Length: 215
Image (cartoon, rainbow, N blue to C red; front, top):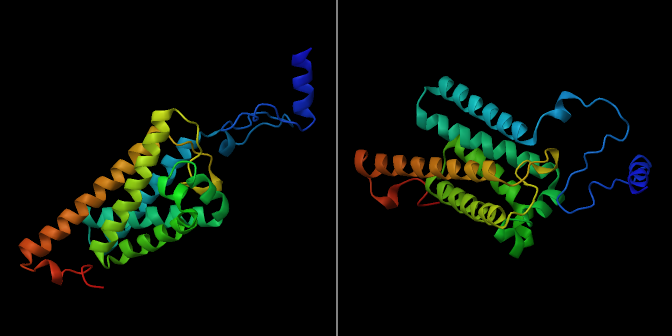
């Protein structure tokens, strides 16, 4: 009897499978076949976005003169701009998602609203490679705070929707998100190390004369 009632309620527009917090409705209420976009997994969408951004970075690097460092800079720029814009398009919901796992967004609500625009600004700074010390340090801060929150969610085995792609994609916080942050942090450290070595050792310049140390 209970099974019949559940089936009736679901098709009457009362979804029962999504009652539990963190669960997504999987009912096919109208019995229509799902499109390819609906069938593709959330992680596949995230990975596809990352691959497109990588390709974008390589193409831009080839245009200006290929080097792996320029690929990383353009990749970082594309990443921050693409993800920041998607978050900004659904700003209120993105901020709410950040509060579920980002420790700073939990404490300071305004940070959750500012984060998409911080990422967009960082992205354009990477494109033009201006104030690279300040940009690198801010990037490390944003990514490290986010990484800590992601690690806590995984450790506590919570089901939380990631705000990295805004409302447009239902991507859960998990190990893919963890590795995404770790790779980004590694790239920022490599860029900071490379530019610092170039200016201090190869260029013979002191720290106070490096771009980014003086604004």
